[in-house]
Length: 301
Image (cartoon, rainbow, N blue to C red):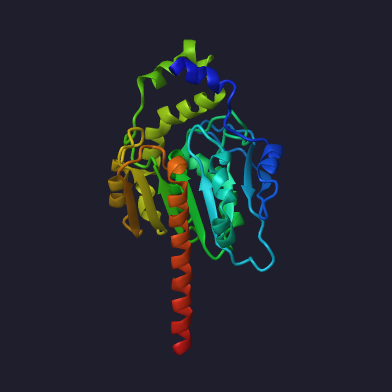
């Protein structure tokens, strides 16, 4: 079975080219547009500087009169790419309620495919231009899946005044609260590593460095002031449900709401997409109600 997965991964890279994205959404009234930007290389501890990074993302264009739309930014896990969220960009109810954005994390998709970055801190720094791009949005929500939840947490830590809500989906948040299979260590051995497809090598490198990367951001959880919604499968044997209790203990300055799904494993984005969409819409609707009530109460004074 493992051999089949590895063999298949050489031919399946879980990413769409820019043209394939255009073709995927052809015929839709609201179609995502492909963008990319470059970030200067960060400095290493030894004083050397990394080469610049290219980050690719897609966004639905704002329509006339939609400048006040909230923004929903999707951050994928591993191994994956922004195409992981394609079905959300086809949901008319969601498209009518928010500007949707999805990004290829560093090393994935067409964000310098194959060039790994195992630091959550650095990954968030490379995605910071997206937060800067949408700072003026009336509401900014980040939806992070699996490893993407780790990066989303860091973005919320770095931007407490700009990130309004984070939805953690099957997210790995607590150091050590996930399964690392023996094959991961085997695949990292010098004699085997060369034969591992780039997509799986990326995910494996992140997996083996994940505990240390999460420990590096551990002191900064109190910086998160965004509202939090957590979705996790009770049967998830890859990223344990105990990540929910970890988050509740460390999100001391955030309001946390949890949804523990009794029949799901690490498959919520695939098997509960409509459920996820409804939760996102409910969050956005509550935001509108809250703002409406606030305006009315101000008018009475």
